Image 1 (cartoon, one colour):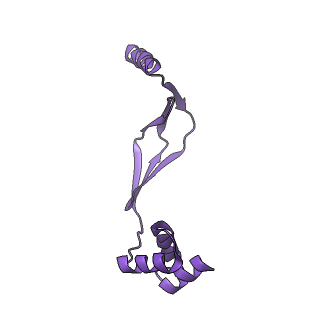
Image 2 (cartoon, helix red, strand yellow; image 1 turned 135 degrees about the horizontal axis):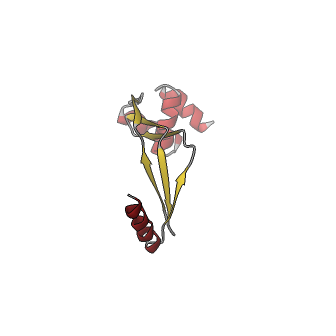
Image 3 (cartoon, helix red, strand yellow; image 1 turned 135 degrees about the vertical axis):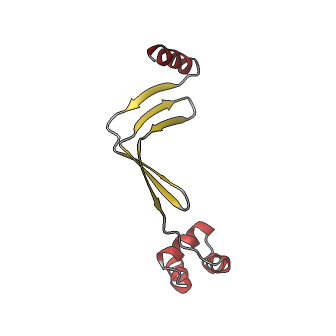
Length: 111
């Protein structure tokens, strides 16, 4: 294993990547539109390049939870967007905060 690790480090050096282990990481959370994944006490390796950073995460203890995803009618979203002259993301955020009350969402965006 030591030889493989040494070869990997040489390869990463040739690619211009600096690799280091991140210590004391307690938790990594991955959120999708419907689920959340909690990786407890993972091993995290950070590989920095010139233009980007890559994180390798290894975890043996994973908790998966369903997200409460509010669903709104497309016409409600469009109405809030038009009335408040905001982006889709802002309209969705306002609808979520107002628990689907369109009038309250529009008021919160326009005042």
